[in-house]
Image (cartoon, rainbow, N blue to C red; front, side):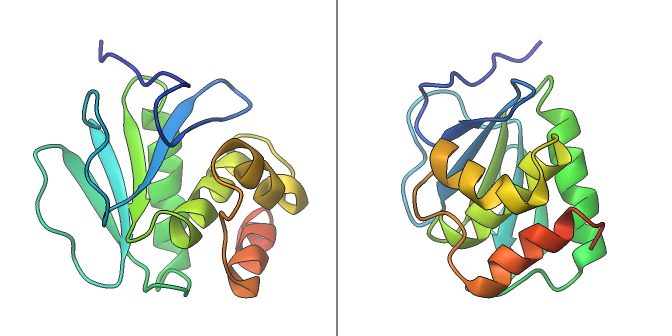
Length: 145
């Protein structure tokens, strides 16, 4: 079994179920400690290869994912894998897209969609989810969209 994240690790958010997921900005160095075993990268262009398994969601800075169905599928996979693996969600800066995805994970984990942005801000970063359309995306994520 994979050594899991610790809730005290930098950028790690604990979901209501107790699952841990790390958020980070790719413009910053990899934090100390074990690397992820699975990652979701939210970028406008394909990220460089990593030694761990990763999924790329085409998601330009300050925008929304190009394929919302794919975003839902990949985030469900990330949540499922967080039960046994070190899962990382990352974008360039680690706040807007990453915070939005983490808020969506919170919705999938049972947080009401209208409370998920607040949850991500309290448990990940106070400036998570940067734009009005990202906030709306999280609210609608709870409705399947």
